[in-house]
Each structure stands twice: as structure tokens, then as C-alpha cells.
Image (cartoon, rainbow, N blue to C red; front, side, top):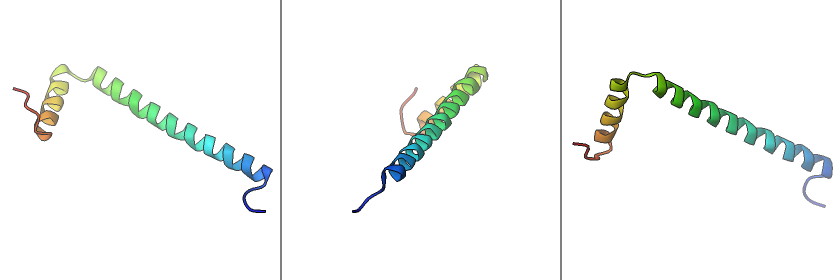
Length: 62
């Protein structure tokens, strides 16, 4: 008999769900931080950051 026992499979499944939840929460908080940081930044700072990014990616912007 190969593989995990039923108890081992449940533990592995719970561990996988816990890891997925952890990844989802980290992604949520990073996304929320980006939204709030850009929301409270001065418009000129946001424009300059976007402008510099466009130039770095060789995208024509003006």
C-alpha cells in the first residue's frame, strides 16, 4: 500500500488549505497597501512614478 493514510491525507489537505489561505491573505494585504499608498500619495508623485515606469519599459508616453 503506497500513499498516505486517511488521517495523513486530511492533514496534508488541511496544510495545503492553510498555505493557500496564507498566500491569499498576503496577496490581499499587498494589494490593499498598494491601493492605499497610491490613494494617499500626491498626484504629482503618482504621475512621476508612472512616467518613469513607462520610460523604463520603453513605452512612448509623450
